[in-house]
Length: 502
Image (cartoon, rainbow, N blue to C red):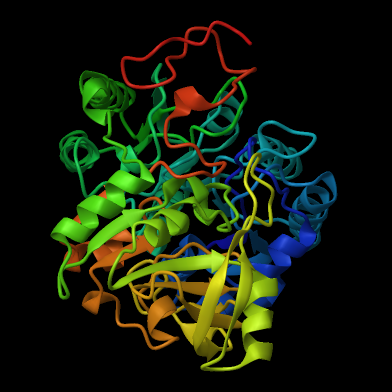
């Protein structure tokens, strides 16, 4: 039996996004528990699809004891502020020092954190932990599928284990795999052999979905290679919205046999490289998407539109109205958009009351250049307090606290409704609509502020899914960003142009 220190610090950083993650953002949690310390971590995360929850369960099942450090997660945004980073990372390290000698460390990380003062937030945290525990104590971390895995992270950790599904329905499972790797290292008495390889192109977030090709087949291949070679293998397509030199894809693996680890990584990296052209993805304009949805969508099999560029799960604030405006302009029928994150309008709807109508100025709070709030007459159809439990595969078991919510119907286009929420959260669970009396399956068109996570709950009922290029800071095509700091020669898309400097 070993004593394992457990902590976590998760943030996915879009350096082009309009809003930074301060300490309050981590306290809010954005669909996850707020900042937790010490013994409070395990009960706060228990039963949730969160890596640390799976790791704790697996560690205890293996007979180990755990000591909680600090755990925190915030919704994706621009950089983590210096204050937030130092408070959370500092607390993890301080509590680790107080815990005294431990036999191992497990960290629940994202892998794509950029702070105001560190490009590689995880690498810096791992350096601080390594400095404290020394070279002999193994450190293993779980990572998001969208991690931008750096050389520092690979050098400082004895094991990194990434999600294998997008939508991320295997987060707790990944924490369990990381715990078992840590257990194997402890039993072995020395680190596993490691191998890694980076790839030289970026690809869009929607094209990384494991429900579709090429990632569907690539992750199936990953599991076959892992079993054949006896290694713990990971593939991270990366988070292509972080402007720093080590942004991008990576394949990495750990095993008792160095030659097999290298062979496994080389084989999978080769398959990813061969699939480069298959990562290209069709994007629709708002108008084309709405027209197609009206032609094909029916009650029982709606067409789902992904408003990917305003995805709160990739640094958007969920408040742009370009797709909603197209729905109203084209007078869509049996159509609903959710969730528009607009606390002032939600409050106004509550003050106005059910059944009443008024002129609203919706969205555009974060200030996307060239855009102003959508003005129009709307009727309040339903009101909610925003407190409910997620039921879909992604948010299942999580207590969602979205603040005052409202369902508005357009007076100009009565077939169009919009769900308002007060607190930023990605629209990836049907309960976000049912909370206000909307049954998603009975719509013809459902527009979602999400890129991919929604697919776990919405795709099984969808006639088809269209990825829409509507206004927002989480650009669907990496080549559209104004990069300044990427490594020279990195291709900005599948078979796309290479970065040659700002």
